Length: 398
Image (spheres, rainbow, N blue to C red):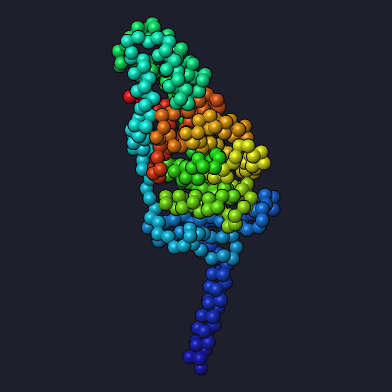
């Protein structure tokens, strides 16, 4: 009889424990380290056509795959086009990039510097020579006003000194170019975490300038500086933009907030990204946006809406405008329109390699009063670096 009682008690304990475990497991929807949206009634609509906002799980070093945790009743699924095998990379240090990019810039732009030096070092510098110098600067996209200013200053100094020594001429040219590039402008990124929230960056630009790729490269720059980063895929109109951004993030262990449907409300995705960044206490949240065409008023209004919705939770600290350095005057027009809509705080110049049009740096800064903060000089994942005025001028002239 005693044995029978013991058996019954043991069975009851096992049964109760099994039910309790099943209940606990049923209530656990997401594994540790992922973000599940918890929305308040006052939040903006999640999407324009239903759906949910997800966060790609932060990849672990050596992990064999990355996946997505959705809002409710969804299991862990692969979100990068099938099973992937991505090792978390360690991006190249920023200082090493600067040296490499300076060498590449010197090779791609030396036609400008050498052409000017050849003209300025002639035994006789008459009006025809000055006209050639002016034309060279204009072809380099320096802009009319900066070109006239540079030529006038050089004329005055060459006349006063009367020197044709190549080294002295080089020094004069570098000094005048550096003054135009303006080394006093603050080119630091607003990437420091605040006391109670992350730094918030928005990245804007038209289609075709490499905006999403640039965001991935910015994330690599920040990870190399030991920043904790989260990406927000608010470019919901371009096919595969979210997956492209998520792949960039996965390579360096950075999670991505994205919608599970195409055409979702970009402002809501951005809102959720900032919320996730606040809850996860990251250092920086970077928000991708659709490639707005500057002549589409409705799309530009939508961009302004994204900024307003985000600022319901936190101020946007940095708005980076990505421009293609080869577009010349068209790039200047883009910059002007974007700055009117979202108050651009910094410029990222891509495709600065392979062109002698380095003067676009001066032209953009003069028109907007906004500094060039980052430059891209290649297709490699680490071919993006902070802009350095002195290094830029040295690369043009040396």
